[in-house]
Image (cartoon, rainbow, N blue to C red; front, side):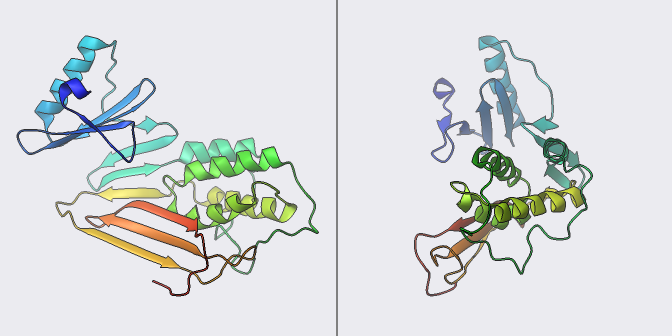
Length: 235
């Protein structure tokens, strides 16, 4: 890629980009032997594709429809990404295909804690389930907070934590088609929203922060994370 004057992203070493002479920008994302190329310079995209074809045995599949568990749908409104099939498989794997849907991913009245008096559960099974939910956050920002909380009990999970994780599955059962829509827009304005609670953790009184980043009115990054301390001032 360096021979073709592409730069490697510092944020993601599997992402390469290049600014073309016409003012466009081209991106190449690679994972093992799967590649996605996109950008706003069709000529440079074709040139890159030709160079890769000369060096490797490449099969061009056209516009991506499915990439590592993420479904991609193109329409006049924009690009919509979701993980319906991933959710269906997860529900089948956990024997929750016939479960009753929940309206929210977490019970607002429930405060999860270490719960020493609770019965311990299979740690490996719990870690695997939370890992599967963590991957869903790529298209489901609305479960980011609860999965962040549940991941804090990976070392010693109890029955209450597993039931809370199952609550997320019940919510997903009723909302398998939800995802993120990247609307078509010529505007490139950056907006960020952030907030933090005060000593919200029942374990160590540390705070939980969250942020949303929008580009041109489209949600592009989101995160919920436990902070290193208890914040005194809310943003």
